[in-house]
Image 1 (tube, one colour):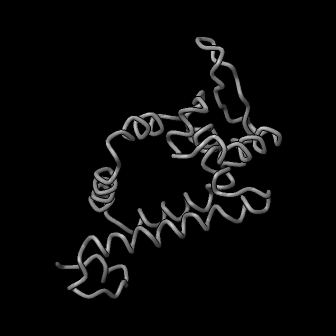
Image 2 (cartoon, helix red, strand yellow):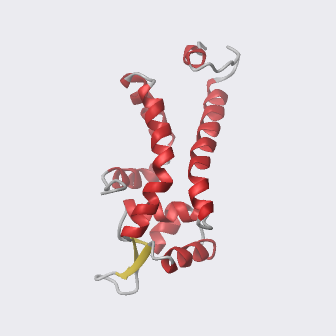
Length: 170
């Protein structure tokens, strides 16, 4: 396979490297960079990646139920409880009871939570924007197409819901 894009990006790989392996390597290190971009502002506040994920969904999917949150994050209530409690105590998220079903707790990001999310994602946005600017629009669309095909079909509803949601700072 021709790995011309890898050479353009100064990635030295063998022509014999299977595309799935190169894709996995590139995705792995891209993810590591994005995660590291968020880690510093999280650590400063005594938070971890679970806190970031919860805050992200509370912001981009306001009104998400705790059950939905756990499903999307593929977590148990026990694993998320500490982070939920900390975010609530810090005033970064709030719980509201559903008007339709008073048993459901719905999560919302507070203005303070929105500000923190903006800080956490600043370097991530910069990293992604810089990469897009170095590629053609066709390359970016191809990247989206590949990522979209990697998403489990049962997660597509979340892609649709979150893509239509407000952005940090809004």
